[in-house]
Amino acid sequence: MQTWKFAAATAFTGTLIAAPVATAAAAPADPVPGTQCTVAQVERAVTDLAPEAIPMLNQVPGGRATAEQVLTLPPAERNARLHQLANQNPQLAAFYNANQGEINKRINLVVSNCAKY
Image (cartoon, rainbow, N blue to C red):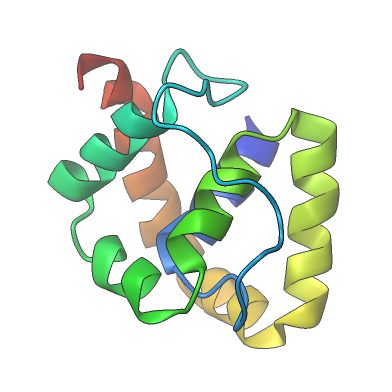
């Protein structure tokens, strides 16, 4: 679950990287490994349960597409990609570390409820 939490935290902060990723975008029906949810279900749950994350995702070029792409990676690849993103973006890591409690609370809420969406 820790890998999922960090993936969702990365998506939650919306500051993954400053440039678009050169990979295929995730489809709404793509599963999010480690959950019982699809990308679309996670997006709807975030919109409803953590709406403050959406403007953050939208303000970074490629932020939403990158978040979707990271969420659909197998756990080991996701973890490696997130560490790479954190190393490239120390402000992301600092933001997550400073707000970890609240972010994890929201993540748990989304993970617990995304299948309902």
